[in-house]
Image (tube, rainbow, N blue to C red; front, side, top):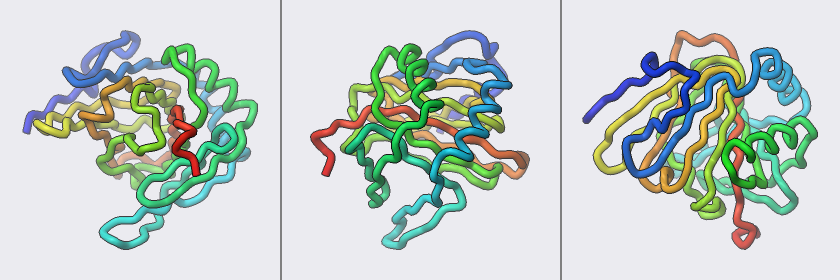
Length: 210
């Protein structure tokens, strides 16, 4: 297995495609200022309905320590790991961020999945954002708030892995066909003791709604 670490290489102020093939992932450091990031994180914690995530693994239901909130347009539903989620309505703070993320990604989004990681003990295993409801041709744009966490990509065929730090206020845009060829994960660590919220803006195909 080839291992590439980009954790401390290219200066964060430069925009670069981190994937060598089969897709693209553009990282934007300091996309949101520190004070704005802190304010938004506090607003999201207090304004949204957060709940523990529920996953089906090896035929059993697992309740995670990590918490999630699913927000979107009316009738936007999303199913992953066998659990169907119904969207909460947009709040003004999220709509403002969505408009800016749409400019960054040059795309329109109708939903946002938010994950609250309490500390480094919370993480996300290897997966692709390729559920049937998602528009496969639309980018997925994410915003990171709070603690810096290590994010990794792994190619589905040759297992090449690439990692980078997602810093407070940074944005990451994954374009098609990234989800077809790559998995990604948020790696756990005992070194992080503060919280992080990640917002992933997506486009749901309504003809899959039930």
